[in-house]
Amino acid sequence: MEGEAAKKHVRTLLRGKKRLQRKYETQFRGSQYAPLHVDKATKQLVKQPEIFIRPEKLIKKKKIIEEAKRKQRNKIKNLKAKKNHRFAHGSLVFVIRLPPFNPIPPEVLTILASLRLFEPFSGRFFKLNLGLYKKLELISAYITWGHPSLKITRELIQKRAGIIANGKQYSTVGNAEIETHLGKYGIVCHEDIVKEVYEVGKHFTEVNEMLMPFLLSSSGLYKVLSRGAILHLAGERGTEIDGVIQKMN
Image (cartoon, rainbow, N blue to C red; front, side):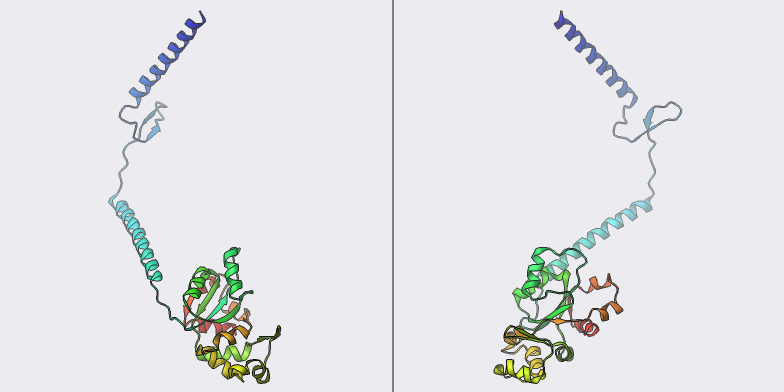
């Protein structure tokens, strides 16, 4: 008896399901893929009337899509050009660490430490090569760099040059200290340091290792630029690095 009652119950459910299915098929026939809305008079779902789309809207939408595709093509083109960028191998560059506005990833901190740029607004001279260029590209959002002129190089060294020798730091050095520590390389005064650094001479590596990182002034930069505008300084600046150094020297 229990088996017969269960079968009867299942048949009742199936009949009810089919009845509902037929009802909805007759009510919404031909409109299952069309948008529906509630008719206020009958309180039932009815097919929404077809909306007229003006040609101007279609043209505007097409222009937006085309503009997005054009920007994407330009972006890919710029990336390819950047990949094939030929830099001046062996030329002098000056790298400045910018203040972080977001947490710095550990990989970036490792590269900055290897370049001895431990503080914001500290800078150093480097001889550009492929390995250094790849490092600068990886941390380009946190630094600004470029090729300084002879005038800016001279002013920077004469005003802010310091030497690390025998485990001691000499923040202000005269010709006597320069001759004592760099005389073995034929360098006896500030002008000799300027010449060796700017021309990337044969003793550039030894002299640059002895030079302390240049601690630049941030106040001069904040007077001219806002906090957000400093972000736009990030990356390669080319010869425009002269203006940045001049504001901070």
